[in-house]
Length: 278
Image 1 (tube, rainbow, N blue to C red):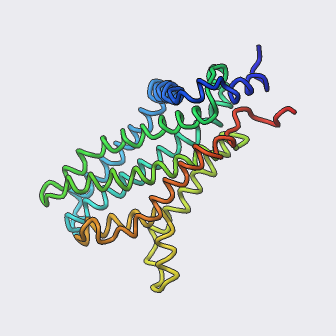
Image 2 (spheres, rainbow, N blue to C red):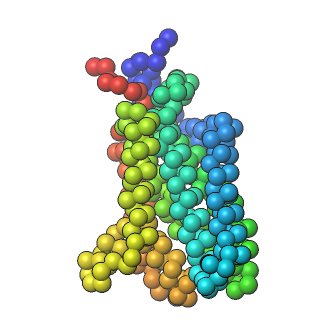
Image 3 (cartoon, rainbow, N blue to C red):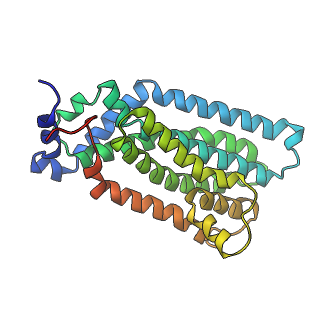
């Protein structure tokens, strides 16, 4: 039997007990997480992440050209790179989650199980987020090496986990939604990476013009706002609560994106390529 509209109907109109059970998303998450790590995609992305962190740590610790940086700034640099690249690999995984499986023809088994689109979406999101938490764990020894002399390690790691998780959740949901509606995996990855580039680029540009407009742009961009919060605490030495306004847009992104995915966004999840039959 081929996977057609009848299969989609079995997925979307799952038995009421399967939809209510909320255990179905855990089953999907477990399967998707195993596939991500056993297939080799997860370990390859994590290896590239660890390679980058090794280079950054070596340069920051030994290169005389970087020795002008104070240790707090060095730790902040490592944390920001860890957060940015960790979120990047998470976004790649989520952008590939549905469109990639459609192209590889590996959605068939999942479509034959009595789970809702919402369970599939949440399960795939959970699997993608496992990459972020794995990347965070990999970053721990690098941050420790750079920050052990200023008693900054615990604070830097907690901030990294906080800001990184907010950004990873928000951008992974966006990547998953793009993946679900894209006609090809290449399009999904391209749009998702362009989105991340558009959000990340302002963090590498000179400071925006002073005034309400420049400040507003910085606060509305969740990536830029998250990096500014890290700067304020790790470099400027501010208290955690002194600059919480920088976390407004990352929190809003995570909450709104998650709500959209669980709510109306689950109906956007298109599990079949091409034009849907009537």
